[in-house]
Image (spheres, rainbow, N blue to C red):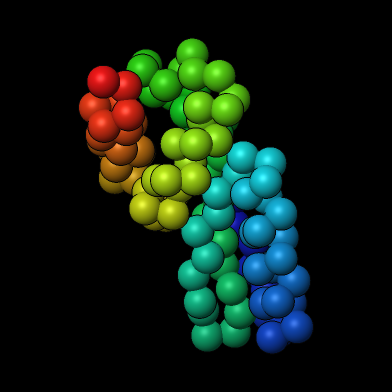
Length: 96
């Protein structure tokens, strides 16, 4: 999902929306554009596509996204691979 703001006033609003979204398990990655913000948004629901994380409870998904949501980056094909890699890293480091 992309959210685009075209004025500085909207930039502030978008940043507030991003912070609120994080409390709901959606971790947007904000990028600056010449005329505003763009936001690629990852959700805890995207973990349904990972065979390891698909059965994780909400709380565990939230912890994972707090740690890795911004590192995943934009919504590109390679970002899905990064998410899978971060799930593996999370399991290796936090489930010993």
